[in-house]
Image (cartoon, rainbow, N blue to C red; front, side):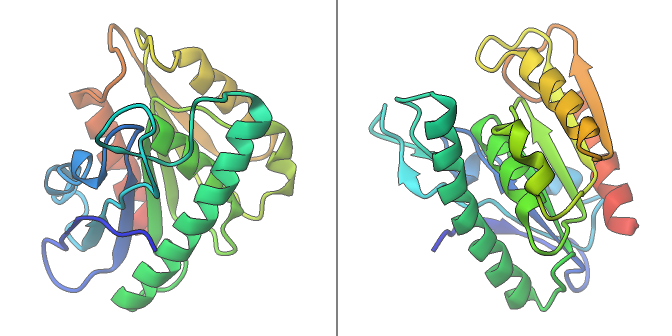
Length: 213
């Protein structure tokens, strides 16, 4: 079972759940600090940042959602499928713990975590409120027609990213729109593999609007 650091809600009872999925080689503590900065926009949101299920296989510290030693599309999809099942179970458990309905969650991911939320979110039986993917990529785009839900999606990517090229988010945007998803995107000039203030502000506004809908 996944677990990780939690934060919030800032006020009152939790009305939404925001799940933050970190990148490869990090853990949940890498993203949970986004919660206080987004709390003004989402004061009744509970935030949780689960640690990925596997130890990072290229360093003595950190976690990974799936191995990267074999980056063939089939292996990447298989890894994402397995991790998505674990994340799905975790989401159900967190929503039940908070007494929230199945649609009261938003998924946020960075890098490999963005790949996971883009893979897992559309396969949820109950449509999430939103998917926010930073510096990620869409795995198995040819299978989008088989997905169960069409949550709104925001893709944010640095134009100078030399780890996951911005072209991966541009390709994801095209594939998602072709499959009937409502997609917005923000490409940040001169930004490498990270999240800047413009991306944080866009993410906060996107989540606020989606959770209020």
